[in-house]
Amino acid sequence: MKSILVLGGAGYIGSHTVYELIDNGKDVVVVDNLQTGHKEAIHPKARFYQGDIRDRKFMDSVFEKEDIGGVIHFAACSQVGESMQDPLKYYNNNLYGTEVVLESMVAHGIDKIVFSSTAATYGEPENIPIVETDATVPTNCYGETKLSMEKMMKWTGVAHPLRYVALRYFNACGCHPNGLLGEGHDPETHLIPIILQVANGTRPSISIFGNDYDTKDGTCVRDYIHVCDLATAHILALEYLMEGKESNVFNLGNGVGFTVSEVIECTRKVTGHPIPAVIAPRRAGDPSTLIASSQKAKEVLHWNPKYDSLETIIETAWNWHKQHINGYNS
Ligand code: UFG
Image 1: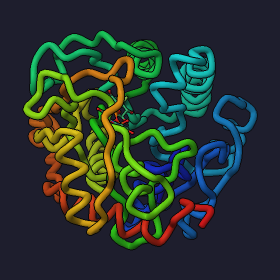
Image 2: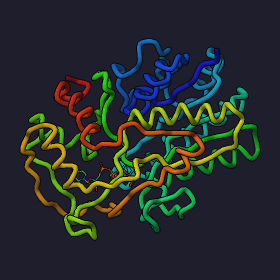
Image 3: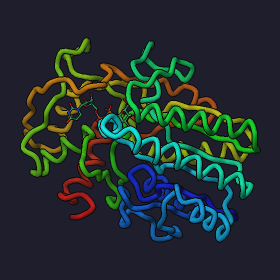
Image 4: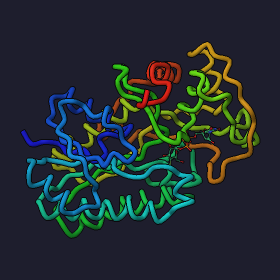
């Protein structure tokens, strides 16, 4: 059996996908530089190579030692705010890193890659729900680099025998029900982990970034999708490519929007904590509403997300955060 190479397999979505792959009987190789990933999150059955995707010799050595059948690529910087402060870091890690990965894949005759893209490729949406054919006009450098990575794969596939699936995630959240894997960013910028840090006593309150948006309660609306459902989609996307099908792009979301205030209220119910909230100014670059149409992923990949209740999603995240007060360092 050929192995699956997971780049960034020690990160949040990467580590969940590695568990899903191994639970499905696949043989998995993980590459991660551990700059933002966590060694503790790597499945004990995965073969781990610590190194940087921008290091061509290192990437070549992995492809030479292992018999790789396909690549799943999560190894990228992913913070919107940071990308606006340090855009060249994003160009270097995300674009140059992907260039090296593709060069090494082409040199070793590996022709399938599934890649984590983002709703940030759309920018301010023209329609709700968003479909894959809508305009892609990113409003931040993170989204711009992810869109450029998609295009790099497209043009590489024109010149070489390479096919790709780009999965545009909406708001990834929740944790593996096994309690071993969680969401541990440093610094944390995402809504649900920040609210749970208030509930576990490591933060005094949550700031709501703007309550004057044109939404039902004035706070931003997002489409929250469980990380295990995202993990499943990667496996389906890889199987799709293994069936010889053409390169493609899919949105991944639940198709339901929740406001920031609704997420806070739901977390109060799940945790029993009062979670003090204060209104703060809008955060630059935040679109008011992002909701996915995932019809295409359901029809073409036969993807069927299991976690469709926000309460259950938050319960899985709380299960991890209450036992990991300081994240993976707990
Ligand atoms: N928010 C707050 N307070 C906080 C943190 C977040 O009110 O302390 C709000 C944000 O303003 C936003 C919502 O909660 O309205 C969700 O924010 P997140 O930072 O959790 O997620 P984003 O929607 O900003 O980001 C997500 C993905 C990115 C992707 C982006 C697309 O995490 O990878 O969607 O816009 F780029």
